[in-house]
Length: 523
View 1 (cartoon, rainbow, N blue to C red):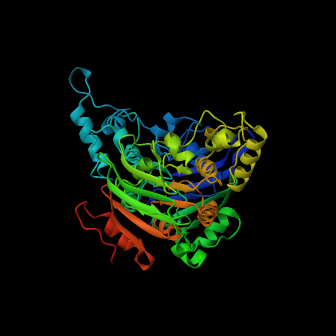
View 2: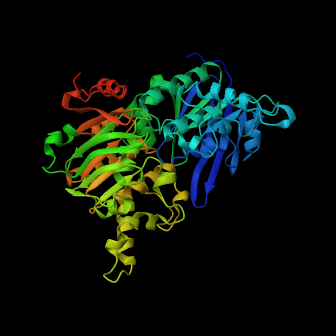
View 3: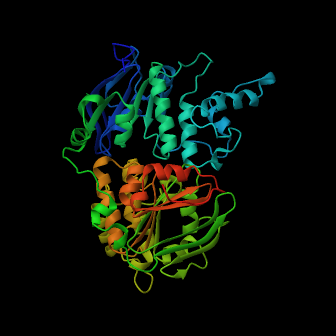
């Protein structure tokens, strides 16, 4: 597309930022035009999110400057950045779940009526105008905490589009999107990319941080690559191919992951006989409606569907997190009674949830204790005394295997990047004691260089006899990894696809079925 301005709107000049011993940014310079979608790419820890946060005033750089529209921003000043039109959409949800959607969106600028009281009608109308650009089905009067993570992310994106009319801030001119689609499914991603392109067409500068190559080539005009905190290159997306971009990011070429069937030569036929996981008539009020499925040892079964279809809710119920659910869950032929997380872990079930911040990690414990938490009892002596040497050995092996980058095993998870937090979760559950592995968006926040290794870890787990149930909103990932794909809509399974039936068209068709539609996997 043609740019709407010759001079850059945003100029980053020789910016450096250090966190302790980590040099997150090292003398980085780059410029961003009005009216363009500009991708920031790199491996986890490359500095792309840090650069976005420096521009938005969340981090104070140690050296260098950021200029927006000719104005040099005060380092580390959120107010100055905001007043000059800089907004940021965070990867992690930063919201008040007990408040309504509308209250969250208007929290910093509540419309007032007579006697200074909050004008709730005006508040709801403003929120609806913003949210319904992205998802018309969201009720803005509903408590935010009742929404799925995907819809909550949409609300956070909508908040960045708010245009304050109090004279204290500029309309949005620059929006930093930090992994905005990590919780969204195919339909929501496509809608978001249309909105991003529309915002750029209006003259906004969009800085787009993402690991998803498809989004970069579908949506972005230019791409700037960082590696180890240093500037590598800026290219027009139309003039670069994916292998070259990956090589710039990680310094080497990686092969495109093959399909599951292509990886082992026989796909689902390689799974062992018997049942690793069996679910019978699993229901939960307002979430699940009589779900039944089975996963054999060595089999990877994917679950496709749109946000709100019940995919994450299904994994929660299988693991025993949903106290209102009822039905039968069996591991290796033995029913879990009582059905709760403790029983699931004891039976050999591991769970990597979608929301690592709320459900996944213990942020007040060290990396080491996060990894050994499920197996601490197995490693302890017969008298229940912890064997620190055994724990240290296991932690070291898992951190090396999953390339968890941290100052020390005792460091807190909050000191890690989002991608390293995700790898920490995977490291916790992928052990020899695991018989059933539930994965909800396992590569969320994982860079392209590490993704291929994570795929290998999942396949290796299946090859060792683990029954894997996988939820992924990335269609290529779902199709590459899965032996079969179950499709969900409105809390029910609407299709069971295998072989040549496993296509994006079939998954989308079954994902949009209404609950009363007869189940069919045929094209």
